[in-house]
Image (tube, rainbow, N blue to C red; front, top):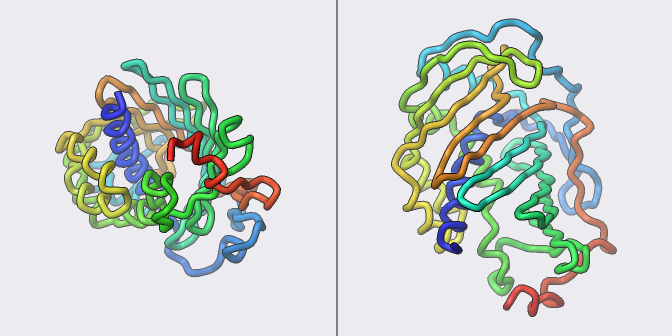
Length: 284
């Protein structure tokens, strides 16, 4: 079961990289977050842009589709995303809030699996994870570069994934095909439905550097190509994706583009616990 979980985690990370690609980030150098190392909020500073008006989304060829979605991602500074996965005995829900600033990403994540909830934050290259009672309802600080921390190896480099996701050349080269299935309504917004096939092998080498060696090995279990369904609104932004892997169906919904209410903060000192205090709980 652990091998299945790790392989699915690897596949989920590929999906996250693909989603980050479509959601993108501005390449501008202007600051959209507070200085690193402070507990101040990291938040989108640009005015909120409403989701696409009720116009009919354009129909694109495979080449046009990749270019249009990439172009639409350039001014994205924040968004919310929900991912629900079920099947093969797995039930998981992720709630993300993302803030994008140049080559970095800040993230709030609430995760529920089999009725167990965890909360995580990624700010300034540091990962904070609240495991409820197991972590005294506080956030464990995890520095991915800390070789002594047994949890560090399991933390992917989200900044690296984000940069991979914004590699337009890689994105456009990895989209093998797309089929226009017409316009449907997704949460009240007209969206064009595409069935896409992605060359996942193009990501493996790049993704490998963002994970520990054990999880990188699990990437080899991912098939050379994966099919999925994408829904794109009139602004050429993703509003939903659906994919299946190892009998597990994952549905991701994106919304609230460039919403300034999206904030990611470093936990306060009174919210933190040192991982050394929890070594027994983690089996270290």
